[in-house]
Image 1 (cartoon, rainbow, N blue to C red):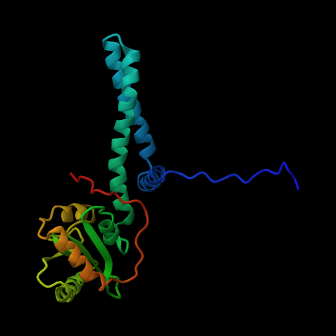
Image 2 (cartoon, one colour; image 1 turned 30 degrees about the horizontal axis):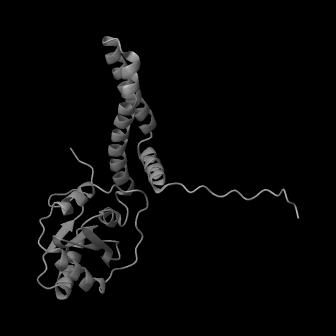
Image 3 (cartoon, rainbow, N blue to C red; image 1 turned 120 degrees about the horizontal axis):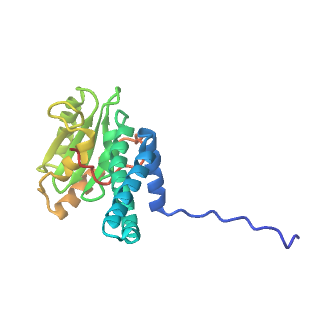
Length: 226
């Protein structure tokens, strides 16, 4: 037996935060190839401003040191905004994009994707929160009829519970994919926490269909669209 046999190196476990940041950077880079140059330019420009202020009052080293974290923070804030818009851009037009966005809402909502799916891949997702039940449709104009049918079905399992209809799209009366999270989060609360849990329990038996969800990091909060 070789006493000097090298032990297999243990794989380093990367922190979830680092993994999320790396995934977000990859997605952003694929959609916006210029992101690296922009981040570097913002960092340098902010730092130069700080040093310039320091030169004006004879403290360039002090202000240069102070503006290092400020420059980093400015770059990170810019990256966060760009990563949010890139994440949406990377899944727009894909089957199940709406479900991916809805399921990224961390607090207050539980989404069951694809409770109804048509042959042409039109689909309806069901979300339950304090605002009640929200049926979200994505696809062609035919999804409106699917939403009507799904609403009737849902009313049988949860009579008296408020049901809202949302259609994902950029046309009049629709909600864009980028504003979908914010749209649900702004809905007025109509159920107590106990009532919400009861509705979830009732609808759990109904379930949904198995469907692929677009991969990639999604923002936990909808980015502000100006």
